[in-house]
Length: 268
Image (tube, rainbow, N blue to C red; front, side):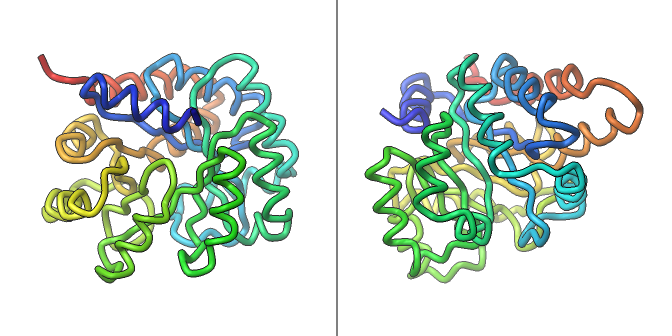
């Protein structure tokens, strides 16, 4: 069984909610990325999302955009990121997804990307700019490779299209919580709960909510109705701050991740 599927089956059996942290591969460097993923696994991450740096991010706010710029300036390439995944996989079994633009996948070679990512130890990819209308062939190839392609739904996705995306998405469905770009927010939309509950009437697949979640309190609140929470910008900013201050970001990220993971644990 694919590690993503196995993890969600495990969480369901324990009545637990998943924690999916995001880090940018190569920020501040690939060696630190490996250490960050291992620490996140140790501190309670259910899955880990690795951002593949791209010059024109589509929905990422300034925090993640800046991290992509730093990684690209350092010369990070796809092959380096696959090596990073391979190094992590040799030391732990946490499910790993890449968040990657379809432009990057297309230029690398669509089937080649999936094959190489799978060979390195990756379990799936989130491709935010891959329209469901054009994803059929790649979804089929991923399925044959036991690799998962995760698609996104947003609050503004029309109802009919929403159903098609959910049906096609593999592993889980990435549910964008807000209209806009990524970034920590003081408050999440009050209608988020009803939005996710409506999606649950359409599928039995796990629903993971991302965009805007930054505190343990927010994570716990979203965990009341979603199957997993995705936290990105807050972690990336913490890495940036520690690096700017000359501190190792790994312990600080680990402490923060442990707080989120604790907030998502089942209540007695």
